[in-house]
Image (cartoon, rainbow, N blue to C red):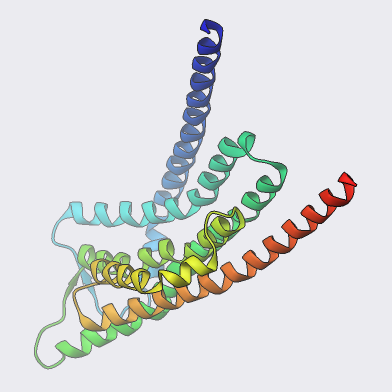
Length: 253
């Protein structure tokens, strides 16, 4: 009994050591990307404001530094996502079967691409609509002047959530492929999921009705897309299970 407890303690220590290693690698990757991004943050800032019709102002020197760190941080996070996903996969890999390893590995590139796609959708589609609408509201009534800090906070609130929420289809497909959920459960809880997504949209969006609507609609479409993809993965999984069962039956004979 003492030997078993000792082996279990060693296994726990080994797992914690492996987890620490993966976290350190991910953290170092983020810091390196943050430094590189900060070196070129001036060019990045110019690219973001090149088509902006409103001149940005700053109220203090520290505001400039905050904006630079914010831009560099977002880019570093985007670049760290595939590294973090790979490190998570390496950590859980020993406990997965060969089939589960192939399944999980295939989703890593999709996580990065969908994050970038979500941010791009928010920046190039949603942001111009909301920003132009709000600017038009002020014409003839107010003098429009945006501070750099407030403007980029507004940009982040309209773009970063899309990068995170666009991961939903991949997460749903992954959980379906492992048999944790299925499209029928997702359909059954649709109204509750809609309610949660509406609450999330209201919380993350700027405080105006147009922003709420423009964020709610894509999120609901994402959920429906997730159900469709879940059905595709679920059917393919059932076919594989049937083939494996039939093969086992023949080998048993």
